[in-house]
Amino acid sequence: MNKNQQINYSKIAVLSLAHMLNDLYSNYLPQMLLFLVVVNPGFTATRAAILVSAFTITSSLTQPFFGYFMDRQGKRWLVYVGTLWMAIMLSLTGIVQNYVVLVTLAGLAGLGTATFHPQASTMVNVLSGERKAVLLSAFVAFGNFGFALGPLLLVPLFQAYGLHATLVTVIPGVLVAILLLLFAPRNDVLTGNAPALSAVVNSLKLAARELVALLGVIAIRSLAYTGMLTLLPLYLKSQNLSNIAASHLVTIMLFAGAFGGILGGFISDFYGRKRLIVGSLVLSTPLFFAFLNTQGTLSTIFLALAGATLLSSFSVTVVAAQEAIPENKALAAGLTMGFAGGLGGIAVIFLGRIGDIWGLSTAISVIFCLPILAGLLGLLMKSRPAARTQRQAAC
Image 1: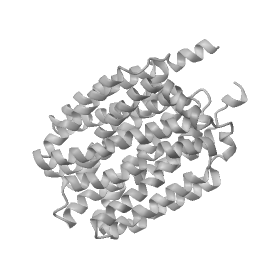
Image 2: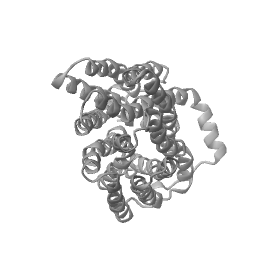
Image 3: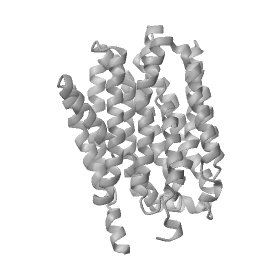
Image 4: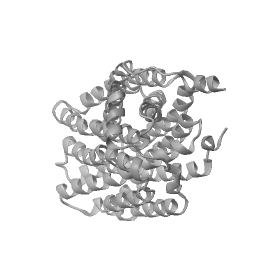
């Protein structure tokens, strides 16, 4: 193994821990919805979807632009300043009374995570040597663990102290900013001549068919995922579950998704990216409906399995995009972790309207059908040899 292939586990660990704290904030607003409904009885499912979408759109649609900039500049300070910015904006959401101001704060907060993800994921890619899918899966899994901690930590906090408790939630953002300031990889990790805009456009054209299929898969998967985070707690509450019980179920789904993401990285290394993406997404739809139509422990098990299969392809799609445009890794991360997810975030508003017009149970059924649609679209993706096969061929 040459120098360029060495794996820097300590730096990857720092970035992964920072990702966990960053994504704790990314699942912040859905946890407020149950309490906003109580404070404001006129807070509809559509309003809830718009609020979550404001964060999702700005955090996602801007990522390709940050990704392109970082491919050329490699500014490490953006990873910690972005997280701190997001923490400050979100910590103010609980003390505002005006809905427009609330949506504005959500949109501004999204810009913080938009600067973190392309830079951090590219650093992990460069530091991971030949184990990119597995280690990027671990990095993504830490983010999913942070997502899962959202309902586990925030719902009890808001339940006990009210929405004004958002002010104290700035503390994790300060801690992660200090962590990254002290221990994040230096700019020289990303050395190399960044391609000019014309070269970027040309590489996108060459990989256009593959990227369109891949981004379509991610957008539909993101729509399902964001739709569940937004409407599933409201649906569970409509079924007479308490806020705490609903948050526990969402937490189980997210923790299972985090473990599924790690497992998905290993499976894709052995059997190929496309097989993992298509197979896992097609399988998740019947598992979600099994959760919906069973009771008790069995229902919870089905929800955990569905969450694991839905998110098992999360990091794999990032690696697949970086393989499609290997000279623009941060841009690829921005497109997959950001832009495509933002498209799904916009469409969540329509799911909210479905919930208001035809009921939350109908909206949930639509959401549960989306993963299989994403899986079928994945059949149009380009098939590449599994990473294990490539390593064996290189020996």
